[in-house]
Length: 115
Length: 357
Image (cartoon, rainbow over the protein chains, first blue to last red):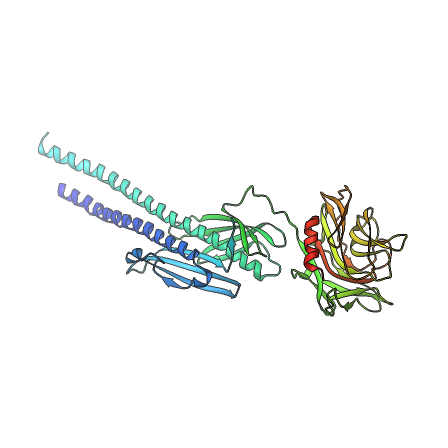
């Protein structure tokens, strides 16, 4: 009888523990992927306008690339001085297809900050 | 306690404690997932908001008359940019990025405030939030008719805004003739009311012409020898009850022209300096906290202490047309500016120096 009860409890418990472990892994994945995305986006935002082009990795920090792959697509609207680049950046665990973090940003050509 | 009792107790403990532990751990993990997802979406919303400012800048630079708010869907999320306040080239904008998730359906929004100078392509104020408490910009909009680009009896303003486009109008005979400007450049100035012509440039009323507590009117003029009391710039009707403001050259008893500013048809200030009848001269008049002032050729400042408030109505603006009294302006006019603030002596001098022959 005790064995039956133990089995009835253990099987769903083991499943839940498995889900917990997966959840913990996803949590840390999301955090790390989000940080990699933010790092990449900040570097892109501080890149001269003409040099903002579609790419992947983490600009200037290849160490993170091993774990997470950050990819950004750049689409330009307008031309010359009156132009806007829209950036879509995604972060995934390297070797997987699931997107863990997506960021969208835009940069207008030549705008300066005097704040 | 016998063996059976111990086993039963153990089972009971397992039955009670294990679900509690598992439930607690699951809740913790679930909350962690929500928290980390929320962090990422918060970040996403902030970048959306920042991007919204740049999208709005592009919109400003490519649209003659921007309409607000500006809404942009981005990858299932949204950006909404509203204009808090603006002058002709200064925009205070609030951009709100909203991250819309499917897993955790609560939308997360972040806002960014920016003050943008479209002429200098410069952001001078930039902070997260809606910018509450930041004062609206002190506007000094400049409506400018250069008369350089006369096409099909129209004269454009700078910046180009269709509502301020002037129409060359003939009351009799011909519209204002295109003549040499002060540099000798052909067809870069307008000649009014010469010979049998009675004419003017008319601009329909629009919000930028509604000056009240402060303003600056200026133009280059070549009055020639036919001196008359005439309005160079006149906003409003031809009665004291409908007239708003005017820059007038008033013919005095000695047949000389003097610069006069008239507000609401009744409050006037006139300098005691004669405008030469030879060549081009820069005339200006201002009102505001510094009183009512007139200027000739970037200097010769003359002021009183009166601070009038001009009325606003839907009457048109006229260049070279008769005002409340007197005839239409006779001579050539060029480089007409109407500023929505009271320019100082040094500012007027700078404009004069930068535009003198």
